Image (cartoon, rainbow, N blue to C red; front, side, top):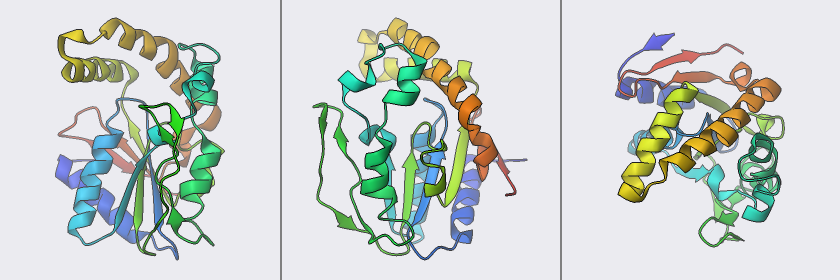
Length: 228
């Protein structure tokens, strides 16, 4: 295991991406629990790759959700609903991962769902350069339905209790004094954390990760490159 500065981590991840050779765009999963820092990490990595003149596609699992009625059909605060009912993996494979993969035509859509309107999306398809990098962040990315669609797998690890604290601070920052920290805590305790525990038990994502990032200390992260 290595530990270093934030910039050293991002540099190490960029180096790992450069080391993977494919005949199609490189599909990178950035997995981990909610509030682990996946989106921030992906954005930081994207900036470094852009500076190296690499074409980057940024996308997130939040744009491949099922409509609310399906996501919450077992109840709003259930782990099973979060793990089994939240994400449209068929749309994700069809619109994004398979077109960028072996034998794909590289014509992709970066989203299939609009969270604000709770409706499906069908954005115009774009064509990815053959040497592009897809940086895709989200939860449950190393589950059986998706595991073989990634060319590099990164798992961002943070203790669950720390994710609750981060989520509450983030909610307060975004909503100010109107933030409902009680609802945030209930969502984490009853839905998100138990769903992650279910995921760990069923899919064993850290066993499949190429790199594990220990993101407890944001400015002094640690990381482990796993042999496969």
